[in-house]
Image 1: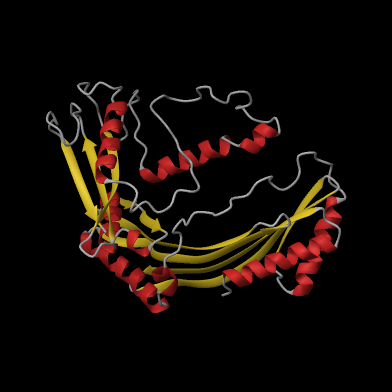
Image 2 (image 1 turned 30 degrees about the vertical axis):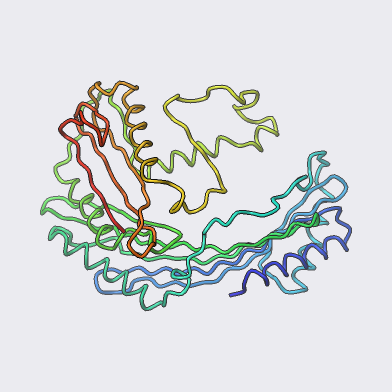
Length: 370
C-alpha cells in the first residue's frame, strides 16, 4: 500500500498534465483504502475478505466550464487518458461563472488524530479469532441464543491526498475498525433476531467483545413477550443507530450547494429558526479526538443542561423514558485516556439534576470502561 508522499506525487502529476493539456485550473484527489472483513458463524469462518482499492478523482476548469472524472488506473498512461477525457467532457458542459477553485485554503490543517497504528498493524489471524470469540460469547450469555446472523470484525486503513493548481497540497491517513454480531434467540415458540455493533477510528475506543455480545443478546431476548401497544400519543426516544440515520437525513437537507443553486427550502432563511429550540446540532469537520479537550465537569454540565431541556426547563415535571448519554474522557494511571460511557435513564421518575440533591427514584446509571 502506498504512503502519503506517493499519493501526493500522483495527484501532482495529474495537475501538471491538466495544465499542459490546456486547463485553466485543476484539482486532483488520490484515495487509497485497504479493507478487511471476517464473518463467523458458530465455529466456522463463513466469509473472509481483504482488498486494496485506489482511485484518482480529477476536476478541471476550462473556459468557465467544469468537468470531473474518476479512474482506478494510476499509471502514467492512465493519468494522461483521464485528464484528456475530462477536458473533452468539459467542452459539452454549460458555462458557470461560479465554477473554480476556492479563493482561500487552510494554511496549516489541524491534526485530527484519525489514524491508529494498532488498527493498521493487526494481523489477520488475530482478527479472525476475534470474530470467532464474539460468536462464542453470544451463546454463552443466554442459552436461548441458538443461532446467529453472523459475528463480524471489519477494519480499513485509508490515505487521501489532494493537490490543486493554486498551490494547495495535503494528505492524511485514517483508520476505522468495527465489531458486530446478530444473535438469534429462540424461546421455544418464536425466534427473535437482534443486532449490535461498535465502530471507532482507534482500536481502544471500541466497546469490548463482552459488552457487544451482552448488548446484542439483551436486545434479542428482550423482544420475547412483546405486545403491540394501543394507538397513543407518546414521546419518542430514538435509539443510537436510529438517531444517527435521522441526522443523516437532516444533514442531507442542509445543503449549501442546493441553496446556491436555488433549490432548497433554506433559501433566505439564514439566521432564522428552522427547528426546536431544544436541539442544537454542531457539525464541525475540524474537531479532533477530544481526550484532552473535554473536562469531566464540562461533560457533567452538558448532561445537566440536557436534563433540563428534555423536560422543558422544569425539573419537577414528571417525565417518561428520558435517556441521557454522557461521554467523558478520564485518564488511566499511565496517562492514556480512558473512554467512559455513562447512560442515565430516568424511567417514569420526577427528573432531578444528576449529581445533585433531589435526584428521584427510578434512576439507573450504567458505566462502561473500555
